[in-house]
Every structure is written in C-alpha cells, then in structure tokens.
Amino acid sequence: MARLRADWRATTALLGTAVFGKLLGCAALYMVLTGLAIHLGLATTLLIYTLTIMAALVGPLPGGIGVADASLGALLIANGVSAPAAAGAVIAFRLLDLWIPLLVGAAAGAHHWRDEPASGRDGRPRHPVARTRAGARLRLRHHLVPRSAMGT
Image (tube, rainbow, N blue to C red; front, top):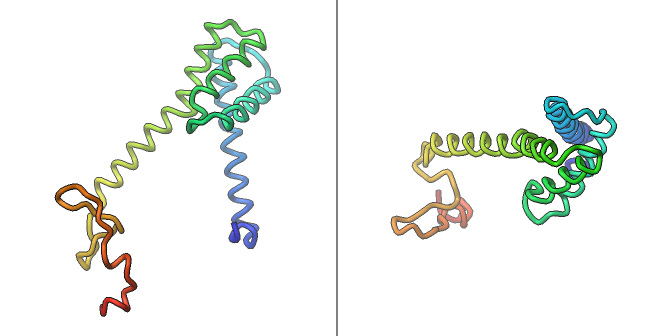
C-alpha cells in the first residue's frame, strides 16, 4: 500500500488494469447475451454485471461461486429473460468468466512448478519449505537463520 501511495504510476496502472478487466467482463456478458438472442441493451447489461459482482463479493466462496450465478440468473429473469435462456446465459458466461481462466491458470501453474528445477546452482533448494522422505514438511535451516550466522 505504501508503494501505491508513493508511486502514482503504479496506482494508475493497477486501477487501469482492474477497470479494464471489469469492462472486458461486462463485454463478455453482453456478447454471451447477444449470442443467445437476448437483447437487453448495453446499459442494462452493465447494471446486471455490476450487481452480480456486488453480490459475488458477499458470498463465502472464491469467485462468488453460487451467489454470482444465482444473482445473475435472477437479474436476467427479472429483466424479462425466460428461465431456460437465463440458465444458458449464466452457464456460458461463468464458463468464460471464471472456469476456463481458472483451468488455464491451474495448467500454467502446474507446468511452471513441474519444469522448475528443485535446487539452484549452489545445490540448495529454491523454496523455503521442502518435503522429507516421509512427506512431512521441514523448514530448511538456511532460510531460518541469516547467512552471516551460518558462516557461509
């Protein structure tokens, strides 16, 4: 937070990225609705998207799972969309907005961790927590004690 207060460029970049991401999400919802022949208008779609995000913040699960889905469906039905069309729109939008990016990110993370060598050039593990043969977690000594105290 201190960096954001001190560096207006970092703050502007962070805010710009966040706003752009939400506008992309709204555009995705609008395209899903248009693709399903649901014509609500851009202003109504923006309002529905904003209210869905607000409802998702209240939910206990990450990504507003369940709460965002129910609120999006209810808001679409309240705006005159039939229940089957609203359910299709919710499923299609949540696939694009949450599940596909989550799966792509999980695959990228798994690929990154699989390909990263377990140790650096000096032979020490790169990560502060390593697993013993028994599978118990073991905090490594050189991460707990400053290097100057270890004599290296």
